[in-house]
Image 1 (cartoon, rainbow, N blue to C red):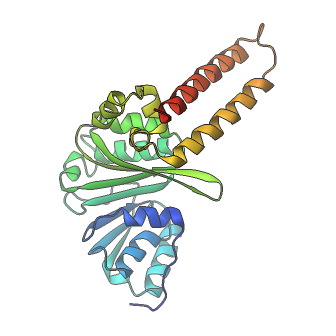
Image 2: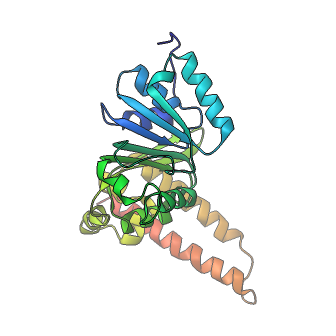
Image 3: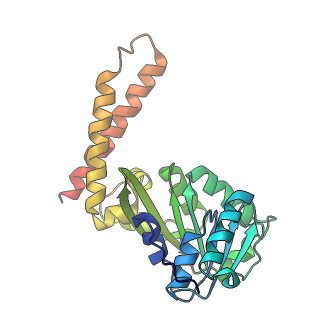
Length: 255
């Protein structure tokens, strides 16, 4: 292997550290293939399949892997999501660095009945790692409805932006939400802020909630009179509901 050593960002390091030892990793939307390269350099995984829809990212990944002497243990494939994978090829799946809606589309296109590689692909997968940059709430709802059981959540901040990591396995998608509900957190709060983070009373989540509360209070204060403007009235109502949820959730942190 090459002598060059990788230095991953905190976000990529957190993702890499959640890949189980001795896995065969499918990294969907691999871009530079930094995570497979890091794991192979550290001897954490057996091999990896790195997929990307773009020729540019794959060329960058190929150059990076060649410079590190890892070309033989990473299979690079041009692929729209899961399409170039076969059932049984991987036991850990990583999808990160994109919006939640795009990730949802990738899962639906690849793993649904009649799709390629189809639902049989899931039989060999022991862990899924998802890190959506946006649309956290709707993506969590999608996972719960499609039998992705949330086993852990992490929250971190990098360059002033918050990132969430969702660790899942095949199973009961609602189980962690029931745990959070039993602990006093509403379903609405769990979908929006994460049942795993709420159950941990994650200190960084508290900071995030406080920041969101201040931000939305400021936005509400700036809204003009909405008496004759239905769109503004609706926006005000949504903000008031959101602020109520934020205050209730923060109050539960004190229990």
